[in-house]
Image (cartoon, rainbow, N blue to C red; front, side, top):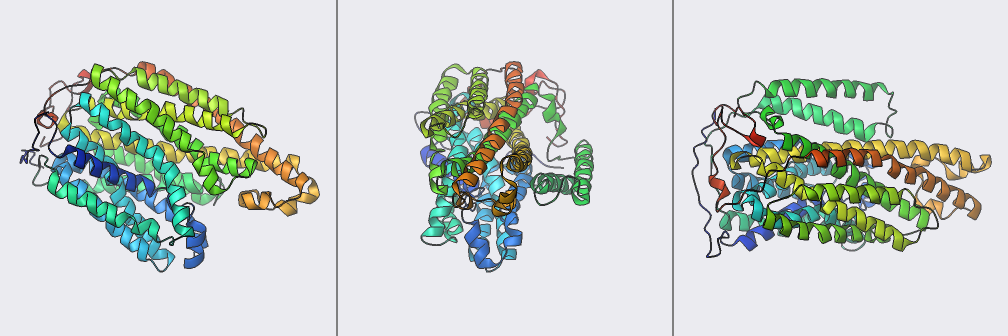
Length: 536
């Protein structure tokens, strides 16, 4: 059992009512969030050089998979423990783990140590994503919080663009190890600011950690991520290994949720799902943000390189309009939510923008100008900017301050699962269509020249004879652009859910950290009766 009597270490406030040093604290939170999200993508352009130097091309996928897998598993643990122990200690601990992983990865002399370092980074990075948002919830009431959540949402879009660009620049200039060394000075500054400037309530002294639930969740997430990553690429979907992991993952999920109903301190408490706002907002985030953002961003740069002959750097730069679009809607929506306390309209409008962007992207062909491509990418960003953080804010607003970390982490956790599955499904559909398109368009004697469809690179395509090159480019265009259209029904489902999302006016107050937790039998999230975990 846990003793949740707060040991209050109050944050000092200035004359305007804002926490003292809040600007400095917010900069540290943004830096921590940026580091954790950047490291999902920063190694993508450096991987060919890394695996060449460390002689591990057969383990290349694990450099990225280890980070995502560990971060996904860590998210709900940090969220729940942060609510029980206090978010400051978890925030500082997450930075420490992340920096330790960066040292191991940066100093790695073989692939084994690099993958271990990436996994340790993920264990810290998953916590930074969650605790950064939870700390803001501790310091700022929901209505004022809207102003600060918008830049945090834009960080995800920025990292998707900046990560590959930075990774490529480090690799070509000062060396790929700086993909990890750069974390040390930035992370150390965030750690120092958090340690000396941040004052938050310290809650529990002792926590009964749910080891069984953690083991089952880790098994479920591992099977899910590996099936999504390997299925249709490393192994056929009918391969016994994929089938076994699918069955094992499904069984682990069932056992995990059964265990949560019996645990004294569950990692993902089942009372979260009694909130309609949590359920609907999480589903919208999974469908529109998880699947939409990561599936489209994951394959659009490759399309630009193949069809337009752009370099990796140039294709990455063409995603900058997405970040501009996110900021163009996220910042004004944050101000409006802060002034009115209303948020429902933003996921509705944002999802419409994402739908329109996907439809427009499905019309791309080899003659479409890059200006139009940038316009479509801007629309996608505008939609995501109006959707991402209002959903997180709606979830946080529906729970007492003592449960904000748990609710935020669960919301992010399921969104991460959605992005993994969505990217895998889109990739599988695209690969299948590309194989069919190449077999239909290439002359029989050209198949050996092109080789394995899964191994085609932009350099290879643009070195082919003109006739074969045109056939491959058309195959790419006809394989990928219809996939964007296939995503539209998914986004329309998200739009329907956005209309069904209940709106609970954003709370305003001087100190949200003093909001009492709902006790058993009291009215809790979304006016539903909740049963708080034992000891709360």
